[in-house]
Amino acid sequence: MLKKFEASTLILRVVVGITFFVHGVVKFQGGIENIVGWFGAIGLPGFLAYVVATIEVVGGIALILGLGSRVVAALLALLMVGATLKVKLAVGFLGNGEMAGYELDLALLAMSVFIAINGSKMFALDQVIFKGQKTDTKSF
Image (tube, rainbow, N blue to C red; front, top):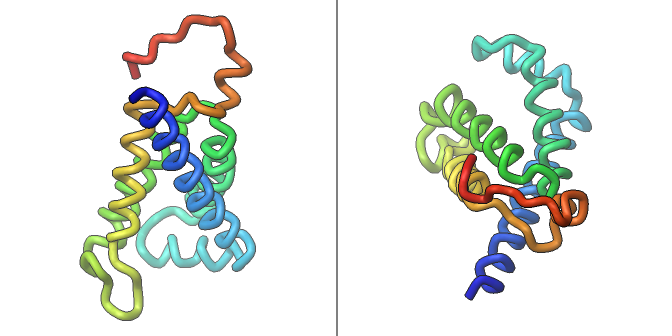
């Protein structure tokens, strides 16, 4: 049973990592200054665009590799809460034709919270780096 749980969590961790990584890279490739301007237009400080995109890229890579998965997932969950409350809630669950709704944000939030609570050990670099050290998997 434990192997199935770990394998499932591994799949979740990698898919969430890839998703955030791609979303972060697209922000930089599409012109981060456009995102900076958009953040300003919705009442957020422009520099947060760099923070969000960097967290998505670095956090995505960390999840894929299994480095600090619980902490990274919690940070990504906070991003999803912010995106949902500040932007997506107003456009609805499925969106309004111009902007996507919060259905993906909600799914990524749920997956990130799951990883933050449960961790993910299978094929995680944390297991190699901290091999032999006892870690408390119950606390967060």
